[in-house]
Image (cartoon, rainbow, N blue to C red):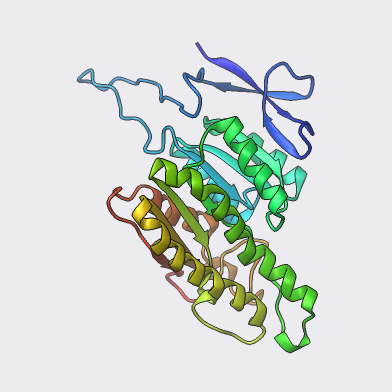
Length: 290
């Protein structure tokens, strides 16, 4: 029998969207009954020889994806959900979060969506604690939240610098610091940071943005060395321009750009890698230059 699970978008606690039952403001999603916290079992579909199909590779995993309501983050969240993980997403656009959470809930695993500013330590602490209360311990963290601000660095303000660095780099530090202790206790976990090929090269007008993404690459490499002895894998993905509403160069041929799903596929490769090894850095380019 299937159970109708109600998905409510509520402001209690403030800014939190989560799955609850018996709400007057809800939508029903058909889903298998949850056997226990943090784990979704796949239906046992028998093969012709009577053996059940294997579980999805991320059954029992809990993933937190920042900036998960649109673009690359949304594609990553959907891919992790399709692989069997329970998924938490955050962002600052409530309407986009609600829509993305509804779509994720149709895939099957439990979903938690929460409005949060990942540049603020208090918001980060609340996001992590409420995610773990709703879904269980975080086993996969994808630091995807980011913004772009372009133009000659000498023409930018200190506020411009602070805004880009806080969103693109400080948030990676804050989120990773928040989840690392729990991962260390369990001696396992994946932290995946989304940088850019702009973190490996330079271009005119990219001063602040490139600085933030170079910082993500450097921070990721050092974190990987700090945490690998604890069984935690830290990886960084450096995509070229991706066809989303956020793009570094608007004049490029959009038909030749990477798709958000390409980045999501790279995340899948990382989290499904054999436990005794890890993909430390992935450079992702389109086949044809835009």
